[in-house]
Length: 438
Image (cartoon, rainbow, N blue to C red; front, side):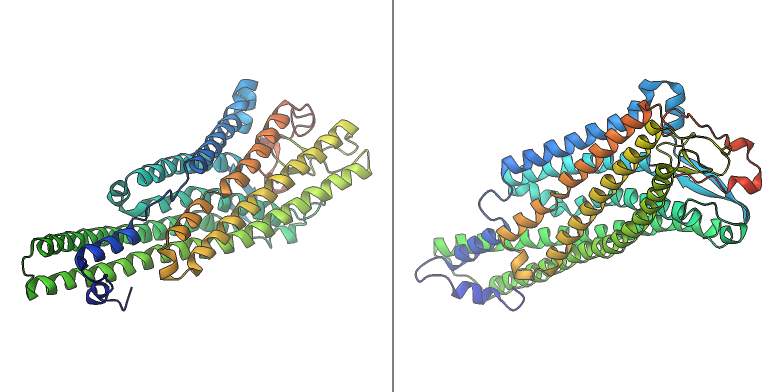
């Protein structure tokens, strides 16, 4: 519509018909296409999926509470400090299982509201305009980004701390990321992403509001000219020029709103794709560490190194503080293997979810301006953006069963058959205790 003028549109009207009514009808069909953009049954399906997501997350959070105060204290925490030999500054480690669960609750609630607004806008085009084209709804991706980043960054910490079943030497310990760098990245990346996303969404909302205002002015002017044409009143040149000006504003504001929406989408794609790569590398490295421990335990009935559970939720602990000869029986070995399987499947579906959402974003960004204005394309991209919820639901169900099995388990991954008291470790031995809270 960039090269189309109002006069060009009026000339397309059939002979002996009201050209202004024709133009108004064509524009209305483009802006507010008739038909079920978002099928009710599909919206209900995704609403149920997000409802189940909220339920799973609530179970993950409250399940340790029903196992007693000790279990609640051991599994439900936000931040802990881990120390290394290189600095008195601690590494600040977040309980990423809890952070992921909380962010998914927030994300699911926002998506539920978004789905309700989609249905309402289908019933009333005016309602869709009043909420500025749902520009604000792009904030729904932000909590999920927090969960992914925290999970990947914590996995990276565990990997850089202990990349094998043998303890690192003092020299190798000093080669890891410095606590100051680790903590700054942990804090700075979410802050930067939040600031940029809010800024871009605000610009998108302002552009959408301007588009709505210019659209209403054009519709009003065309409606007035249509009434004058029907009544036989002569239309002045000034009225035509004013309407042409409204049309140009309508076109330019529409292009700007589409550009802002595309820029916001590209931003999430730029944020999501590197996060996906970093996430995949970090969790793969972590799973490799866990697999090595499982294989080590499976090969020997007695070992210097064992996976134990301390106060960390769903912790994977590699410790040199166990007494030599501590045995890990078959039941414990099976529990370790089960824990590894849970983690592997959970991370796989988390990565698939991020891959799917990134692919949807790339698809939207690749559409041309004319294509994205079509009702079919808008419907496909909007509904496709909800599809990642199915994969996320599977990932959270796996995490839920992981939590339930671990809390109830009497193995080293559950009720502390081996206990490591972190407070009894001196400064040089604290670094040998590596925890991964998921």
